[in-house]
Length: 93
Image 1 (cartoon, rainbow, N blue to C red):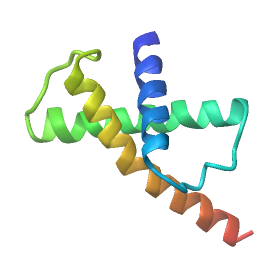
Image 2: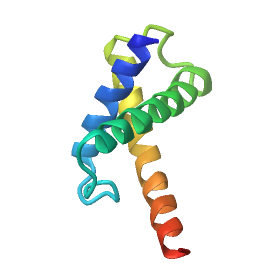
Image 3: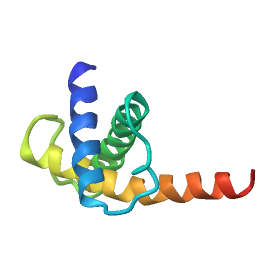
Image 4: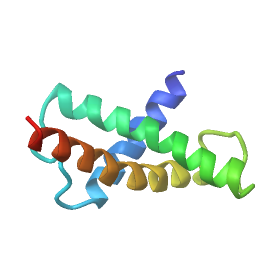
């Protein structure tokens, strides 16, 4: 569990640094850290499903370069979708 949180945090932070101008840039403090962890965990799950289950690449080891890379790529997929949902929700208020 702790390993998944750590991987999610690392993937979330790296993906948010790679995505300029995402919808979550204005957040700061604990909310920003929680968003990074949540997006990273969701991205790690998406990356695992795509690469390990879908394509048969990689294994179940969390802390290898393949696991970290797939988590970052998965987070880069999740981040624009989450930003779109956030913007869509704020428009309908």
